[in-house]
Length: 386
Image (cartoon, rainbow, N blue to C red; front, side, top):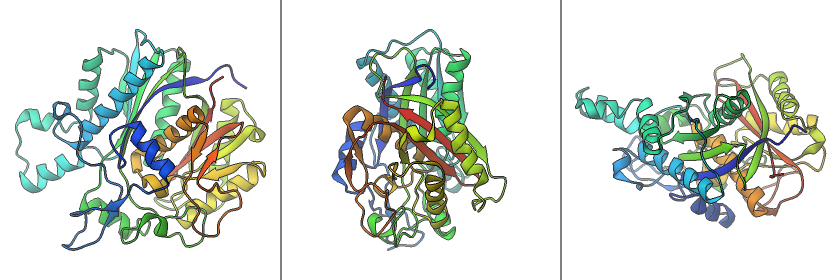
């Protein structure tokens, strides 16, 4: 195994369960999905739309939108959490922000309501650099700052990039944030048209990863932040390594040969310095769609031992798009800290290795996979603190 990996030493979360990592954890262990019927998300009056949408909250001084407030709230919670766990920022603290669709509410208002007219200050608030700049100013951080984007795999992409920065000596520490607050009627409608999002049923009736009767996923929102450092005294978990690849096959469909997905998993294990036999859990992308679930189940059978368990928290959190793999990585990190995996309840016949409800944590590492739309494959290897 590689020398001590990069510590996840602080976590901050804004989700449909609430504006804190504790609200996320309490929601998950309850087994109750975060999604509710959200008025105003349908294309037509009276539409019933189930979604795990982040509610109003945060500090108005952080910006005019839920996006800006959620990003800053999650990042601030992660920094404060890391400090409470013994982290001291180095001279070069970098910032990575994973985002696919940023400030959709403000851009929608800009074009639809205001006809492209805004005061300059309000226009600048919509730029992807603005929430990063204001966060760096708040803490006086001077390392590199940039956005990463790889569709649903953006969270994994950010963790891999953060580790690469630290391995290369570019930074001393990284604050990584993934934000997706993008549920507008237009976006919801187009995911329904794609045939992957379900809005007309309760989550556990619609989204059943690796179980019979699953029809897809319920859409969600989240902002999730981590502080990553090798100088943490009490990390939640260690990021040992990871890998990314691309199918180069289709804009939505997975290459049925699964060559690139399988290679991504094996490359991640090699990069982390662990074997497939060391993997105790697959924290799956698991969106509840037929092709994604079948692909990950096939890789599980090809690569991992019979005792390797599989789970996906998307029935509970919703599919948080650009923040999906980040919130799921946070679940693994908190599970290592608390000794329990908050898996959703199994509600139908399913895969024999599927975890059923909150499960006591066993020994071994976790591989967190994420398969982004368009062919983005990713896998990150997470381990308990040494």
